[in-house]
Structures are given as structure tokens and as C-alpha cells.
View 1 (spheres, helix red, strand yellow):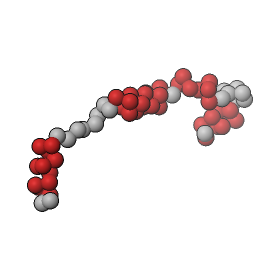
View 2 (cartoon, rainbow, N blue to C red):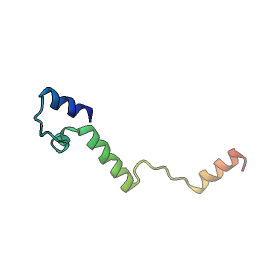
View 3 (cartoon, helix red, strand yellow):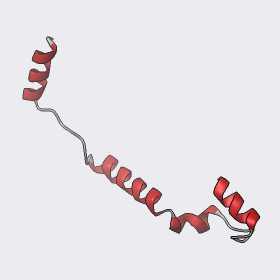
View 4 (tube, helix red, strand yellow):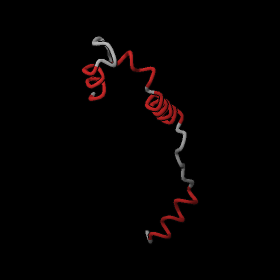
Length: 63
């Protein structure tokens, strides 16, 4: 919130400048949001363990 305040006080942007007017310029943030949303919905990036891998891990840990 510091950048909009400085921009308004220096006269770079009009006084009625709001966050909704700045939204089209937040490409990186919007991209991260979309990637996280897709990952949550689809399970993209999750690693699923099979019974075989679970047995191997238990053997290594000594359980």
C-alpha cells in the first residue's frame, strides 16, 4: 500500500486512483494465484505414495 500512496502524493497518478485500476498490471501476482488455484483444484504437483514405497520407508525408518 506504500507505492500507491507515494504515487498519488507525487502526482504520478490521479487522486482517485484505486487498486482496481492497478489490477491489470499485477501480472506476476495474478499468475501465481492462477497456478495455485489450478494446483489446488487438480492436485497438480502432488506426490502419491504406493503401498510399496510406504513399506520401503517403514523398513528404512525401522518401524
